[in-house]
Length: 213
Image 1 (spheres, rainbow, N blue to C red):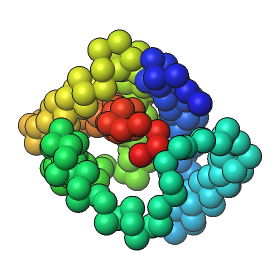
Image 2: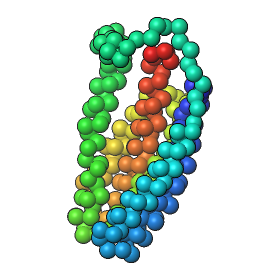
Image 3: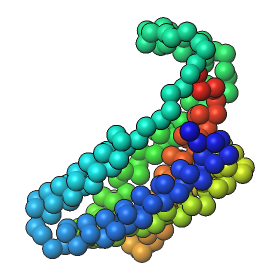
């Protein structure tokens, strides 16, 4: 559906719109967490999130893609899985890419604990977690707009490399942060890392094979 030379910009623009709404949601979450006691505040956040996710799912369910006409014979799921080892043996470039993705995913497990780390280290309020989320989403928004265009012009591999560097900077910054204010830059870096990683990983994967595969 989407021409190759526009995939980065399209994904970046779409994700930017979602991130902008996310910033508003994070601001609302900060108010809810601060105004209502636990567990009511978390329950309200979950309910609001569920409502918006249902709306997103409805829009996605209404999307229609034109059928892809393939000249290759159809294969069963079992045959498909059986041929995958041959793909890895034949395409060393793709095998190295999958290894890199696995290592990247493992290395980023710590980002899920950054909010807990900051709150515990400086004894911050629950509402502060919402503000850090806003910084995370702001980093995502800037990354989506700028790196989507860069991916179209210079390739998705470069954007993935930038994403890894952003992750290193974020985790090192969290360890070295002397005051809570530094954590805004850390969360913005994590947001930029997350956006660039998602954007480029989708684009580069589609370029490893023809649509039939």
